[in-house]
Image 1 (cartoon, rainbow, N blue to C red):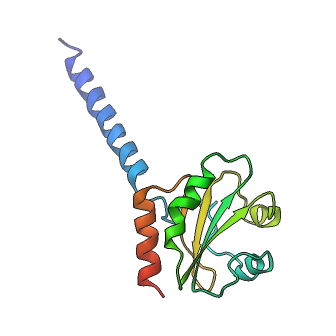
Image 2 (image 1 turned 90 degrees about the vertical axis):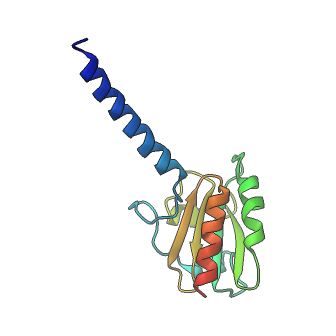
Image 3 (image 1 turned 90 degrees about the horizontal axis):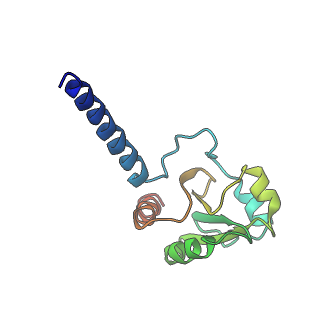
Length: 144
């Protein structure tokens, strides 16, 4: 009986940790909070590599590699965002290792959403969820 208050406190702390962890997982991962996530990309370097050459205001660059099992589904999910103002492009590490190296990519799929000036407005690490795609859709729709 004398350990009941301690058990209650530990239970409350465990619930709080679980709540914070679940919110972090479900929150859109596109918030620029990590120092490892680039805040800008060189659209000219991407264009020289044949990526995003149509001149649209938005580039959704999906960085992949040949060994990635989830990269194909990432491209399928993000593909419908393509349109007159948005390029959705695969940047395969086997064909474009310089672009992967330039941005320190060590996990794929890794998606960068950049505006006309190359400012990264959103990013997704891993396969995009429906919420991720909706968030990217809102970003490219509200900022032309």
